[in-house]
Length: 150
Image (cartoon, rainbow, N blue to C red; front, top):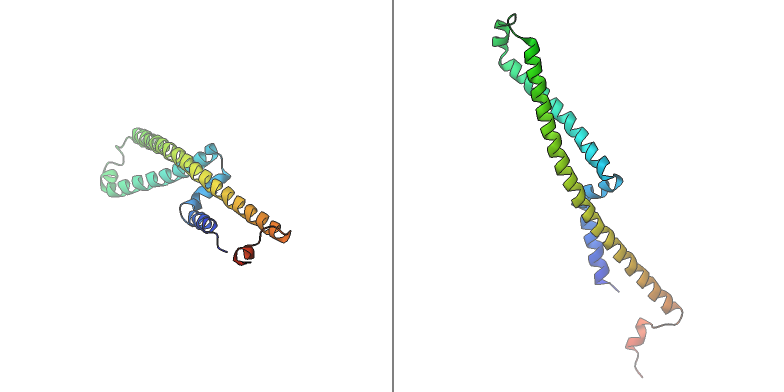
């Protein structure tokens, strides 16, 4: 006999595991601070690489001006400006990353809580089904009794 509640619950669980829950279930391995810290480290590395690529492209774009003023350039002030801009960009991205992934972690934990509740419901359905099978074996109500007439 098919139990529609059990089938629906199993379908929802499988859809969650394959879809939006794929990343959410991985987040269960981490505490919030660890999860956000890991994402912030990834962001810092990505921002650093992107910044150096942009600065390199800018230097290549302006290479003719820099070569012409090679002796007259103030390398110290240029380095300070580049460093200040890098720090501002990094701090901005780190703040945004912290906010986004903190909220995302909270949302994933709520989704995982619903998933856990659904797993608990499925477990209880299986236990109820197992209990009914054991009662039938011990002489309890059988599904064949309904069709028997005197």
